[in-house]
Length: 116
Length: 112
Image (cartoon, rainbow over all chains, first blue to last red; front, side, top):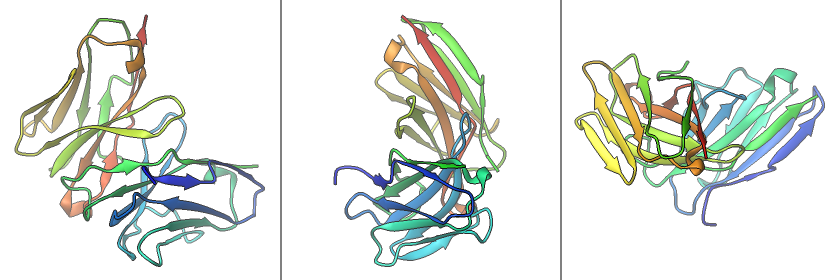
């Protein structure tokens, strides 16, 4: 596709359920990033991949959060046993070269997660 | 944690006026980038300035970088109602794993 595509765009889930958020980066982009953004705040880094390798997962809040990119293209962010504090927009981004230094990062429109 | 802090947090101006917002950061960086987020939409990359650059222009946007003061500014000239958005600075530090670290943003309202 032309841009970074995320699905679902909106997800309402009950507390305790697992959620999987999908990101389809721009074709050929090697780096893929996940961010979380609460209302009125800036995006907060979660994790990123170069190809299929997870380079940095220091931003994942706890072990309920995990991400994978098994074939170096589509990525899934999974949140297990969701809690209300997980409610936020989850943004995916990609870049054509590895890392953010000197590269333009393209963001998707995000997945809004509401945990009730 | 967020590396960049924008100032002011909110800005309201009339169409045609200039809008200036500032970003301060704590540690040395490789580059600094500015993004725009319209209400409910994605983040759009505006401009990237490298640590060895002092000023950059793109259309009505002018970005400056002062590494000695660890600060950057974004100037939007001749603002339009369509410039209403949140603006974020984001820094990249190779030592921090080569990823973008965002500030809290400046919310700009341009009144017609």
